[in-house]
Amino acid sequence: MIIYYDSYCKICTNSSTIWKKLDWKNKLTFDSFRNIKDYPPEMEKSLHVFHNHRWYKGYSAIIQIAKMLPLLWVFVPLLYLFKLIGFGDFIYKLVAKNRKLVPVNHCSEGESCQINPRSR
Image (tube, rainbow, N blue to C red; front, side):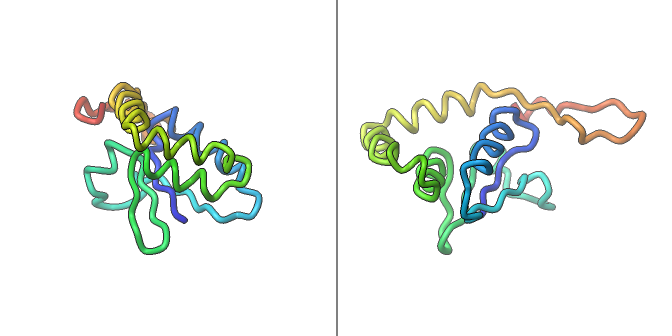
């Protein structure tokens, strides 16, 4: 499973760090989509996961990640229930829309960083 997260987003990088620690069997691979040349603009809006030749995004991606981490299995039925009633997607979109992006450690030495107003 490949998890494409936003390295400009503190919530995203913190989540990835936690998932890495819970991934005892090393089933997850993490990559910032910002490392991909000409990445799809949709990746700026939500988490993307590629697993078993399928793409998952947003809240559905979180469910797929939880299914891979044994410590999170207890939450999987609840995650599916939230998906079924629309609560999971609603909360995910609310958080994703209001997250702050800061390109930390991605600026050239001696230059100021420019924050793209469209990547909010």
